[in-house]
Image (spheres, rainbow, N blue to C red):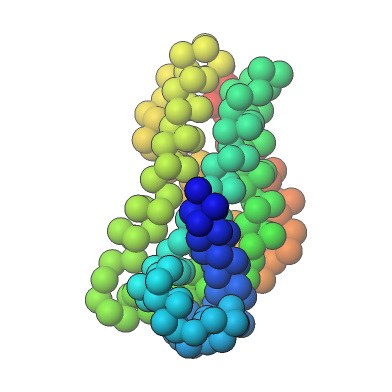
Length: 197
Protein backbone atom coordinates (compact mmCIF):
# COMPACT_ATOMS: atom_id res chain seq x y z
CA UNK A 1 0.00 0.00 0.00
CA UNK A 2 2.80 2.45 0.87
CA UNK A 3 4.40 1.85 -2.54
CA UNK A 4 1.12 2.73 -4.29
CA UNK A 5 0.73 5.93 -2.27
CA UNK A 6 4.34 6.91 -3.00
CA UNK A 7 3.84 6.12 -6.70
CA UNK A 8 0.67 8.27 -6.82
CA UNK A 9 2.38 11.13 -4.97
CA UNK A 10 5.34 11.08 -7.34
CA UNK A 11 3.01 10.96 -10.33
CA UNK A 12 1.13 13.99 -8.97
CA UNK A 13 4.42 15.83 -8.38
CA UNK A 14 5.53 15.08 -11.94
CA UNK A 15 2.24 16.42 -13.30
CA UNK A 16 2.55 19.65 -11.30
CA UNK A 17 6.14 20.25 -12.39
CA UNK A 18 5.42 19.25 -15.99
CA UNK A 19 2.64 21.80 -16.09
CA UNK A 20 5.16 24.54 -15.33
CA UNK A 21 7.27 23.36 -18.27
CA UNK A 22 4.25 23.41 -20.58
CA UNK A 23 3.38 26.91 -19.36
CA UNK A 24 6.97 28.14 -19.82
CA UNK A 25 7.69 26.48 -23.18
CA UNK A 26 4.29 25.73 -24.74
CA UNK A 27 3.28 22.27 -25.91
CA UNK A 28 5.61 22.11 -28.91
CA UNK A 29 8.58 23.55 -27.01
CA UNK A 30 8.23 21.06 -24.16
CA UNK A 31 10.30 17.91 -24.36
CA UNK A 32 10.35 14.78 -22.25
CA UNK A 33 13.90 15.70 -21.20
CA UNK A 34 12.84 19.18 -20.04
CA UNK A 35 10.09 17.60 -17.91
CA UNK A 36 12.54 15.08 -16.43
CA UNK A 37 15.02 17.88 -15.67
CA UNK A 38 12.35 20.01 -13.97
CA UNK A 39 11.33 16.99 -11.88
CA UNK A 40 14.94 16.19 -10.94
CA UNK A 41 14.70 12.67 -12.36
CA UNK A 42 16.05 10.84 -15.38
CA UNK A 43 14.04 10.24 -18.53
CA UNK A 44 14.16 6.50 -17.74
CA UNK A 45 12.37 7.09 -14.43
CA UNK A 46 9.90 9.44 -16.12
CA UNK A 47 9.05 6.63 -18.58
CA UNK A 48 8.00 4.49 -15.60
CA UNK A 49 5.17 6.97 -14.98
CA UNK A 50 4.28 8.28 -18.44
CA UNK A 51 4.96 7.07 -21.98
CA UNK A 52 5.27 10.53 -23.62
CA UNK A 53 4.70 14.25 -23.15
CA UNK A 54 1.23 14.05 -24.68
CA UNK A 55 0.15 11.60 -21.99
CA UNK A 56 1.51 13.94 -19.30
CA UNK A 57 -0.33 16.85 -20.89
CA UNK A 58 -3.62 14.93 -21.10
CA UNK A 59 -3.31 13.94 -17.42
CA UNK A 60 -2.72 17.61 -16.53
CA UNK A 61 -5.93 18.57 -18.32
CA UNK A 62 -7.78 15.78 -16.52
CA UNK A 63 -6.58 17.18 -13.18
CA UNK A 64 -7.95 20.61 -14.08
CA UNK A 65 -11.28 19.16 -15.19
CA UNK A 66 -11.57 17.07 -12.00
CA UNK A 67 -11.25 20.27 -9.99
CA UNK A 68 -14.03 21.85 -12.08
CA UNK A 69 -16.25 18.79 -11.59
CA UNK A 70 -15.75 18.80 -7.82
CA UNK A 71 -16.85 22.44 -7.66
CA UNK A 72 -19.87 21.75 -9.86
CA UNK A 73 -20.95 18.76 -7.78
CA UNK A 74 -20.80 20.87 -4.60
CA UNK A 75 -23.05 23.49 -6.21
CA UNK A 76 -25.45 20.85 -7.59
CA UNK A 77 -25.84 19.34 -4.12
CA UNK A 78 -26.87 22.66 -2.57
CA UNK A 79 -30.42 22.60 -1.22
CA UNK A 80 -30.53 26.37 -0.77
CA UNK A 81 -30.24 27.24 -4.48
CA UNK A 82 -32.89 26.93 -7.18
CA UNK A 83 -31.98 25.54 -10.62
CA UNK A 84 -31.31 28.94 -12.21
CA UNK A 85 -29.05 29.98 -9.33
CA UNK A 86 -27.17 26.66 -9.53
CA UNK A 87 -26.46 27.00 -13.25
CA UNK A 88 -25.49 30.65 -12.89
CA UNK A 89 -23.18 29.81 -9.99
CA UNK A 90 -21.66 26.92 -11.97
CA UNK A 91 -20.91 29.25 -14.90
CA UNK A 92 -19.40 31.88 -12.58
CA UNK A 93 -17.29 29.19 -10.88
CA UNK A 94 -16.02 27.96 -14.23
CA UNK A 95 -15.19 31.52 -15.28
CA UNK A 96 -13.18 31.96 -12.08
CA UNK A 97 -11.32 28.66 -12.56
CA UNK A 98 -10.54 29.65 -16.15
CA UNK A 99 -9.12 32.96 -14.91
CA UNK A 100 -6.97 31.11 -12.38
CA UNK A 101 -5.67 28.79 -15.11
CA UNK A 102 -5.17 31.30 -17.91
CA UNK A 103 -1.65 30.11 -18.65
CA UNK A 104 -2.81 26.51 -18.89
CA UNK A 105 -5.51 27.59 -21.34
CA UNK A 106 -2.81 29.17 -23.52
CA UNK A 107 -0.94 25.86 -23.50
CA UNK A 108 -4.14 24.00 -24.41
CA UNK A 109 -4.66 26.36 -27.34
CA UNK A 110 -1.04 25.74 -28.39
CA UNK A 111 -1.72 21.99 -28.19
CA UNK A 112 -4.92 22.25 -30.24
CA UNK A 113 -3.08 24.24 -32.92
CA UNK A 114 -0.42 21.49 -32.90
CA UNK A 115 -3.15 18.87 -33.36
CA UNK A 116 -4.72 20.89 -36.17
CA UNK A 117 -1.38 20.92 -38.05
CA UNK A 118 -1.42 17.11 -38.02
CA UNK A 119 -4.79 17.08 -39.86
CA UNK A 120 -6.68 15.84 -36.80
CA UNK A 121 -9.95 17.54 -35.94
CA UNK A 122 -9.36 19.26 -32.57
CA UNK A 123 -13.12 19.38 -31.92
CA UNK A 124 -13.11 15.63 -31.31
CA UNK A 125 -10.40 16.00 -28.68
CA UNK A 126 -12.13 18.92 -27.00
CA UNK A 127 -15.51 17.15 -26.92
CA UNK A 128 -13.92 14.04 -25.42
CA UNK A 129 -12.49 16.11 -22.55
CA UNK A 130 -15.63 18.17 -21.94
CA UNK A 131 -18.33 15.53 -22.27
CA UNK A 132 -18.75 15.19 -18.49
CA UNK A 133 -19.08 18.94 -18.02
CA UNK A 134 -21.69 19.08 -20.77
CA UNK A 135 -23.52 16.15 -19.17
CA UNK A 136 -23.58 17.96 -15.81
CA UNK A 137 -25.08 21.06 -17.43
CA UNK A 138 -27.71 18.92 -19.18
CA UNK A 139 -28.56 17.19 -15.88
CA UNK A 140 -29.07 20.54 -14.16
CA UNK A 141 -31.31 21.70 -17.02
CA UNK A 142 -33.38 18.51 -16.81
CA UNK A 143 -33.65 18.84 -13.02
CA UNK A 144 -34.90 22.42 -13.45
CA UNK A 145 -37.48 21.37 -16.04
CA UNK A 146 -38.71 18.47 -13.87
CA UNK A 147 -38.95 20.76 -10.83
CA UNK A 148 -41.09 23.17 -12.87
CA UNK A 149 -38.50 25.94 -12.49
CA UNK A 150 -37.55 26.01 -16.18
CA UNK A 151 -39.61 26.13 -19.35
CA UNK A 152 -39.65 22.98 -21.44
CA UNK A 153 -36.73 23.56 -23.78
CA UNK A 154 -34.57 21.49 -26.07
CA UNK A 155 -31.90 20.41 -23.58
CA UNK A 156 -29.16 19.80 -26.16
CA UNK A 157 -29.62 23.20 -27.81
CA UNK A 158 -29.81 24.97 -24.45
CA UNK A 159 -26.72 23.10 -23.26
CA UNK A 160 -24.81 24.22 -26.37
CA UNK A 161 -26.02 27.78 -25.75
CA UNK A 162 -24.85 27.79 -22.12
CA UNK A 163 -21.57 26.08 -23.01
CA UNK A 164 -20.89 28.83 -25.55
CA UNK A 165 -20.45 31.23 -22.61
CA UNK A 166 -17.58 29.04 -21.37
CA UNK A 167 -16.03 29.06 -24.85
CA UNK A 168 -16.45 32.85 -24.99
CA UNK A 169 -14.67 33.16 -21.63
CA UNK A 170 -11.76 31.08 -22.92
CA UNK A 171 -11.55 33.19 -26.08
CA UNK A 172 -11.64 36.43 -24.10
CA UNK A 173 -8.94 35.22 -21.70
CA UNK A 174 -6.52 33.60 -24.12
CA UNK A 175 -6.94 35.56 -27.34
CA UNK A 176 -8.21 38.97 -26.25
CA UNK A 177 -6.31 38.92 -22.90
CA UNK A 178 -9.33 40.37 -21.07
CA UNK A 179 -9.32 40.28 -17.30
CA UNK A 180 -12.88 41.44 -16.64
CA UNK A 181 -15.80 39.08 -17.13
CA UNK A 182 -18.49 41.48 -15.91
CA UNK A 183 -20.31 41.71 -19.25
CA UNK A 184 -20.02 37.99 -19.90
CA UNK A 185 -21.33 37.20 -16.41
CA UNK A 186 -24.29 39.52 -16.95
CA UNK A 187 -25.04 37.91 -20.32
CA UNK A 188 -24.81 34.39 -18.85
CA UNK A 189 -27.05 35.27 -15.91
CA UNK A 190 -29.57 36.88 -18.28
CA UNK A 191 -29.58 33.77 -20.50
CA UNK A 192 -30.22 31.50 -17.51
CA UNK A 193 -33.04 33.76 -16.25
CA UNK A 194 -34.76 33.40 -19.65
CA UNK A 195 -35.14 29.67 -18.92
CA UNK A 196 -37.18 30.32 -15.79
CA UNK A 197 -40.94 29.84 -15.81
